[in-house]
Image (cartoon, rainbow, N blue to C red; front, side, top):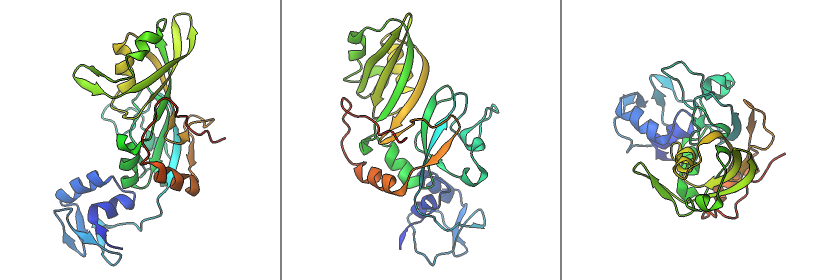
Length: 252
C-alpha cells in the first residue's frame, strides 16, 4: 500500500501526522538510506524507513484505549517542572501512545489513547461530531438562566467558544454539580466558559468522549476498546453533533 511518509509514521504509532512533518523538516527521517526534507513523498511496503537512524517499527493495526486520568497529572511526554505525566504512568509497552486531545493538570476522567496519529487527530476535531461530556462541580447557587447563556457559544477574553449544553444535576448548599456537553474541547474551555457566567469550577471530570464512557474505570487504569466498537465509532465520526440529546454509551 502506498501512502505519504508522514501518514506512515503516524500509523506506526510514533507520533501524530503533524509531528511527523516536523521530524521530516528537521532531517530526522530517511527513506532507503537517504534523508527526506519534505512530507510530499510517497512510500510503500518495500520502503526502508528510519527515524533518528532506527528502523521504523512495523505498523500494528489501529488500536484505542480508555484511560482514567487522575487529577494532578500532565497530558504531555515530559514536564519542565517535573510534574508527573500520563505517559510515564503507562506500562512501558504503551508509552508511545498518542492522546486524543488533552485534559489539563487539575482535570480528571476519560482520556482516549491510540497508536494511530491520524485517528487521534480525526477524533479530536470538532467536525468529527465526538461530544465531550463532563460532570463539573462549581461554586455558587446555580441559576438555569445563566447556564442558558452558554447554549449559543460565547467569547471570553478574546477566545470564541462554541455551543455548550449545561444543566443542573444537583445543588448542594454553596456548591452544585452540572452535566456539561460540548464538541470543541479548547484549552480550559469548560473552566473559562463557566467562570464567565459566574460559576468557578472546583472539580472537573470527563465522563464521555464520543461513544466511549469512563464508566467504572478506576483512576490510573487502562482498558482497550474492542475492535468492533472502535470500527463503529470511526464510522460514526462524521455524524453531526447533537448537544441536547447525546449520551455516551457506558461499557460495564
